[in-house]
Amino acid sequence: MTIKRTLQKDVSIVLAGEAGQGIDTVEQILMRVFKSAGFHVSATKEYMSRVRGGTNTSEIRVAYRPVAAFLDRIDILVLLDPQAVDHVRERLSTETIIIADEDSPKEEGRGILSAPFAKIALGLGNRLLSNTVALGFLVALFDISAETLLEQLRLTFGKKEADIIEKNCSAAQSGWELGRQEAVKGRLSIQIGRGAAVKEQMIISGHAAAALGAVVGGCNFLASYPMSPSTGVLTFLAQHAEEFGIVVEQAEDEIAAINMGLGSWYAGGRAMVTTSGGGFALMTEGLSLAGAIESPMVIHLAQRPGPATGLPTRTEQGDLDLALYAGHGEFPRAIFSPGTLEDVFLLTAQAFDLADRYQVPVFILTDQGILDLNHALAGLPVAAVRNANHIVHTVPDYKRYRLTESGVSPRGIPGLGQGIVCIDSDEHDEGGQITEDGAVRKAMVEKRMKKLLLLRQEVLAPELFGVKDYRRLIIGWGSTFHAIREAMEERKASDTAFLYFRQVYPFPGTAIPLLEKAAEVICIENNATGQFAKLVRRETGLAVHRNILKYNGSPFSVEELVRQI
Image (cartoon, rainbow, N blue to C red):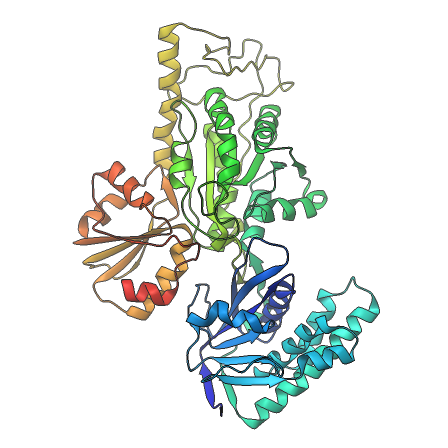
């Protein structure tokens, strides 16, 4: 088939191959190469819950403007494994260009750019180098210099043996020369605007944004048990623990992890746990303990499809109800729901200040979709972080649970001052001593619940995008943000606006008049029962008119939202 394509403004590249074939490494190198060349770039991925085999894919978007949403459309498919084409077949069109080894089976009706990737790799002594050859081939099609690619390869493999570095560079150079020949033939023309400012930006993932937010928030202790998709936060902080001054403990289980975190807060630390739904299920008794002893606690809950093990490496927004109702008894909490990497960073940082000031558990609710998102950013909103220490020096007659008008008692720690810091999981009096007195019990419940009123005053207002004089209002929270925004931009509806919730609980009262104004409210979320829509009804009495739901483990694509909106 003769290829003659011109790709402008936005190119969707999908890398497809087996688990363990090095797709993640190719993705990371490509992103840095594209950024260094002045392109806006983002990447999303989907991968199977296995170490080897199966099919994993990574979608890299290269554009003239910032992009971060998932697309169904594939402009260029790079087949690192010939069998992987079946996994993405429904996303292919007659416009899709496939880059594959010359020995791969040909796809009828598709544009094919093939080259002897495996033969070149074998000539260099290692078939695995065929990925690097294909990498060089693709980079050349974008008119990016070989030097830019080789520089990034040397940075990536800098700690490897010299022989490995040089073979990868030779493979990339060979692939680049083959790709340059195709570009000169004019079979594929890629015309995307570039910007010098992009070159100075940094590429960051959701995992790194959450971890850095914790650092800026003053986190100095992390206890967790590995569980995808939350594990990336644990590993990032473990890798950088010494330079950030953080103690990182891989606990024996999630029960131990949250109790270690509570012990850290009691001693004056600022602790976080990072987990996923199944792990958090084990933490619920510890969550109630935090409520009873009025301890700050920061919980990063990275959602994945359940119940039970579910789909361990896929995405879903199915744990809102879990975070909202977990724990026995009644006690206040706050739940953040970041939808951008900037918000992942900022809200994780702010969670520490909020938890510390009001002595309550605070959740950061993310999912695989946003944690595995990578894109270039000019910077992180460090200046917007509010961070203060709210610990007091105790006096001789210090009472940990002194009744106050606000409900917030001065929080002391052992050894700082002259008082005794007594806490207990049983109901207690002002001094922390066990009691079964009904009047004291009533006073303590009311004291704890007063803090919910304070949290309502601190709640983050939702952000409105689109026209002010709308008839239809789309509402979304968390990781649906980018897909909804881009779908709105494509649709260009003059009667529709989008209300983005960065915090879902306490529910922001400022949203009520915005909801009341709409003739139709549409809620978009990645779960089967419309959990946020139900929360809106519970908190406001206002019903959502239509739910757009998805729960197959994949994020919303821009195209499907354009259709459904």
